[in-house]
Length: 106
Length: 156
Image 1 (cartoon, rainbow over the protein chains, first blue to last red):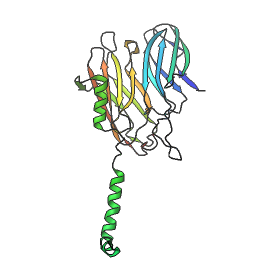
Image 2 (tube, each protein chain N blue to C red):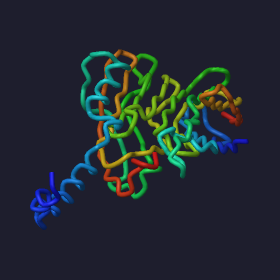
Image 3 (cartoon, rainbow over the protein chains, first blue to last red):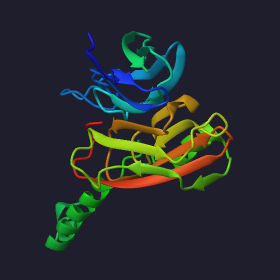
Image 4 (cartoon, rainbow over the protein chains, first blue to last red):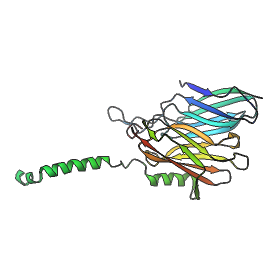
């Protein structure tokens, strides 16, 4: 369902600080809005985001309703070795979406 | 009570006064929205009553946010990000949204640079606070204000 877009540099030198962008398509319904008949629209948000680099968690985020729809995160990590970065989003009901990207470190 | 005894109160001046009063009442913040005390409570809940130093945390927000639905926020913390001295956690708080918590980020020495960006919702003009925790247990605070022209107060 959810469309995910990741930006990770293809190559990096060892020790270089790289910028990572991760976007997931999600309404992030806050639970504070009301529908046309005045009924409260139920909360439906992503709660957790995690980025693992070679099996080690390098970045984590916890979201609240104040995160805008289609959450886009920009963060940094140090390029240590060639391998995969995995990104995982978990919503309030425990549903998860994952995506990975590989990086070549020289 | 006869109708005549009420009519004298409905002068032009009193009717105008009622209108002004209604505007004033309707513009008062709704109790469901967070206040400065809620923000302090949220910080206390997460970090306890440890002392917080101002500085070393830079929040970047647009001076004017035309749309409170999506406001770009960047938090930069001045830290060497070494194994001995790095930022472990950054938490962002709002004094005016329905919930004081906005987001929490966990970092490690491998981050290389203590900087995070996200897009947030804001229910009106306010001063956003970010608190960063270092690996040595110090707490650092930074603040930034933004003027929200289209508030997400109903739409949040």
